[in-house]
Image 1: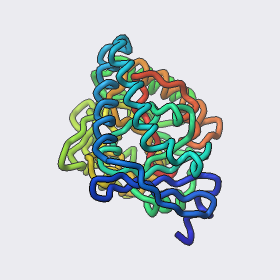
Image 2 (image 1 turned 60 degrees about the vertical axis):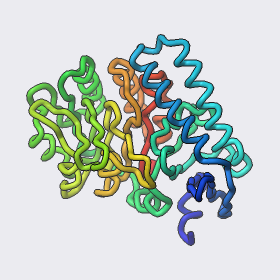
Image 3 (image 1 turned 90 degrees about the horizontal axis):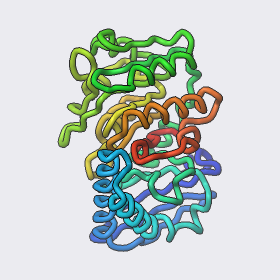
Image 4 (image 1 turned 45 degrees about the vertical axis):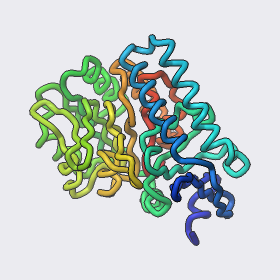
Length: 313
């Protein structure tokens, strides 16, 4: 607590805690720490499930499902009413550092109207954010761009990004092999992987990305000597976590290994929509915006609503 207010600066910390049957919020803003009871956890949990269900339906229908669209909007408003609106006096319009709990780890926070264009980052805890924030932003001197198989627009996405980063290591098609990608990632400043993502319940180290000759596993990323400072995982469920009290899955593995910032999706994504959103995001990042701010400025569609920033922001 002694270090947190100075590190936050103009940001606000929102840490959510489940105590018995209730959901509580701890906020730190302007050097002041407060706790507030928000209400029954179970009702929020149900609405988070409805948000995820409706968003998945919309992605599968390429955005053309009026019932799912209405259901998503209604459930998102209820979550916002339960979790964010009671804290509006403390949070204001500040950039947020959010430490969720339980099912809220799976919430695509950007679907909440109050967060639609606001920079925020998701972290396991305040202490984890302090560690990531303390590492500072690293200039993108060594960039690695990778496209996995069976995604129609992944190669185009990576080749478009290569024009932003002259001299980047680019690996597409058969060249995107597990051992070669793993070696390239070690020590990179910025990495972008456009690949199918698979979340493994019960063991985050078995969550993986699909490359040309097999899976790049969570434990492959954990064993890197120096994981990328900033890594973008452009694929379905690459930021998905268990409903516990920490960020698990691939994002959690990378944060635990020392990566400062991860951009990943807690929900399914649309291939074409992801391509357009990631090109837009990197353009803003390349012009000097911090990752959380760059992502917040990208227009969202159902196919990109799950993307969020983890770690330092």
